[in-house]
Image (cartoon, rainbow, N blue to C red):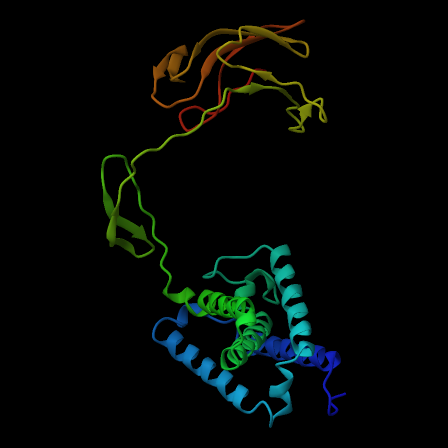
Length: 300
């Protein structure tokens, strides 16, 4: 190992070394706080990182490790480690950036996990070095590859070093009224632009009736439930052993107290239905498509 010609084995060993170093930093220094990398610190870190890539490129013929970063034997193990950590991030529930990890290792806050950051830093460095070599030895046939490497480099760097300068705000847009005031964690702020809602529509669908087991919450029958669609043309029908009858439909209404209803513009189809079993009393309830003005009803 580590003879004159480095191969894939050395690539996996150096990648595993980065992970071990990352775990050591994770337990000693704690997770990375990306909120500290706000401007101008992120610009300084980016400049130092680019300078490091230029130095590595200039000394590639003198330092064996630097020349190894330009090979497939270094890129493939790095991609494999990055893929494994990315899959682990997808399989674990991630917490918000400002919250602490809920596991002892830090996998639930993967973007601040040192092994993840170091592996992606190495991957980004390899991509940047290949892009530098393609720029300095420009060939027209390598333009697609060059653009791919530059785009990947910018995407990874911007998503990490630029995350501290990103602001999330909430704005309530209404029709016929421009709004430029937004809310965020610290209070209110004025945006440099105004937003006005020109048109807003919601597709409403007629309600569906089906039988549900009140103990298990599963449909009856479970694999192939029977469904009755209560649209404006429906008057009466059977649902298993129940006879469903619609007294009247109100296409733009929401129920109120004592069986009354209000006309509400934009509310979906709603109707007064009753269900009559073959044996037993009749139950009567409002049935709707389920929205902010009226929750979904039920017949017992």
